[in-house]
Length: 287
Image (cartoon, rainbow, N blue to C red):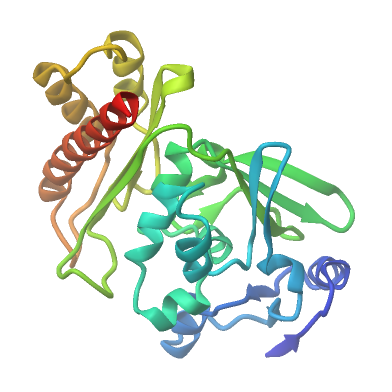
């Protein structure tokens, strides 16, 4: 196995273009597990740890640009105010050691349906910046990034450079079901983001379909019927929202849980997170 170690972004793109079968690695929290268990044996590893710009973030033209190598710990400590849903999800990832090494870029690259960062990225309308040496930059909406189980829209010569997310204009919440409270892969997960300025709500479902996905019909329901000036949520609307979110899932039975349980859990998490977010919104509105 070759080990490629570029020191600049240009070198990284060149290495990926010249050896497209190479597997990028930064934290290694997904890739090394597969290698250690002999699930995969890449021709080459493309170590991106020396590419410093991937660990930087900034707000550019009103949009938060998070480098692909920014760790979960950095997101928790520095971006909680701007991207609260993503920060909440980051707190549920593995152990402190994993959060220090793992990154949203790595989560996207692995494209696992169970990745914790996917639901809040979907709910917040994130856009993924990818680049190749020969074809330049592409901006891929998160909703179009996931193509199948551990398959993404990345082309063989492309690398993930950053994630673009608008700072939150309203409450965002993330919920996750697991066999315990820490260091666990999600049985299923759900994220909601309120966008009061646009009078709409974003959703994200994880580990309950071949890909992370949005609950489009549930979002359309709230766009039509949610009264943003009301002092409370209509319980019937909340129940319909939960049912539509559950209907958007397409889970399977596996060692972590049954499909039936996942559908039920999505329903419950959707209702809970929407209620939490709405109560938060009311508090801010009254302040």
